[in-house]
Length: 247
Image (cartoon, rainbow, N blue to C red; front, side, top):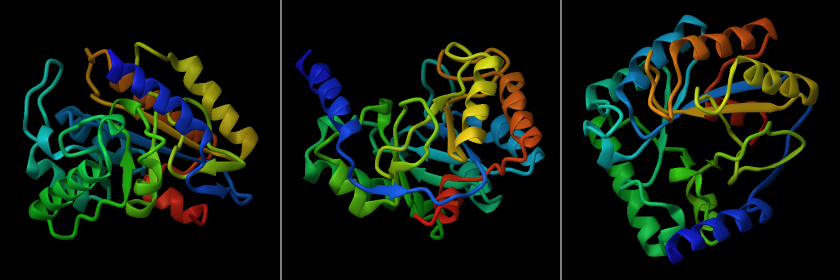
């Protein structure tokens, strides 16, 4: 219980401590689609939908979950990761064992990062993990400065559009998850991004006709992709978005 309470407190503090503030330049709104943990359907159906709409996604992966079944999906394979990487999608970093950042001290976090980098380099030596996402969406106020030295950005799951002055080590991301949002909600986020000239990030897990509580249907994802196209918003990876905003 203490660990869970500690995680909630750390995550709340992390929202307010800006480890890497960055002011967005005036630019047209952009959107990124991200997937966590490694469901095979994200690399299959999810990536295919992105590519059909001229976009690429960012996949935050934990090496220990690759190829492993869970209660909700089968983990994607090494071969699928190579295909994603070579198709222009971004392979990005969770902790190797998918432990919460709030439960790791500095040395343990360093080990987790290195194990993950070593694992993905062993699959393809050109995979370079530049960006991080907090497992379970729980940030750590103590680990943020450490992550700022190791990654260009770190993404959470606090909804909203990234606009004005953002914290690169606590990027906002909104759920593309059927249990949490409908098509009208997706449209509202896009409208906010257009109004602010901001960077909209969606996160999810599996993409399936009968998704897990953490995933979405192809229909909802297709709606979001078409919403981006109607507004003329580029669909880019997190790495590419950071380049565009000068971060």
